[in-house]
Image 1 (cartoon, chains in turn cyan, purple):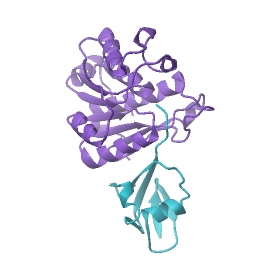
Image 2 (cartoon, one colour; image 1 turned 120 degrees about the horizontal axis):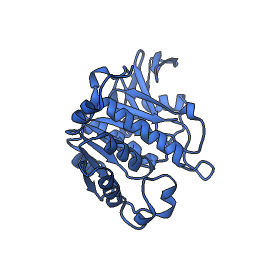
Image 3 (cartoon, helix red, strand yellow; image 1 turned 180 degrees about the horizontal axis):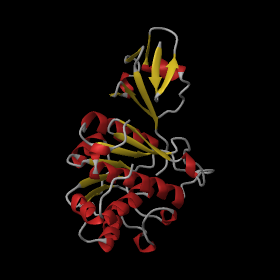
Length: 67
Length: 203
């Protein structure tokens, strides 16, 4: 499947992934992140169930300490 | 593209606006002062912390404020700059319930926490619970140099300002210039939202 991740076309094997699987596939080890799929917020509690499918727009925003 | 607008119209438009500032440290104190100087009518500022000597390397406070609550110190600073600006101070530690209660009615909320878990908390709370509000986050401002790495990007009603990369650590402390740049980028983004939402850059 092809998704648009942070405005870049990105390929992943399979028809769909959960957000948790996608984060692992992206090697996103950042503990603190905000995920939006097609403009909708996906909360941390939903990562294991929320699905990402072919053509979806995914935004991953890393939250970096400091202020 | 820069928007044409004389100072008289800018001040007229900003005088009736209300902006929330979540955290009054390096980002929050500098951002609040920039917005006050620009003429934003009401600032809702929130923090639980006290000014300490180490804060003075980047936060908009003075030696006389050491030991005082940051909210009270910021109210004092802004009053001395422009007493027409109404500053609503809340000395609380923000949680999702308080975010929804205190910032309801703010058109724009500036995230100005230092801890990444608090940044995540307010992002999730505002995106889910205050769908009409704009949120401007600061993420990645540690160390010095690397001007060109600092940027602003948009996703929906969320703006992210910073390098989105460098965590604060012993090797990368927060310093006045880079913290101040990101705070000013946040304030600049707030003005763009408040003054001409119809011409904001696309996502």
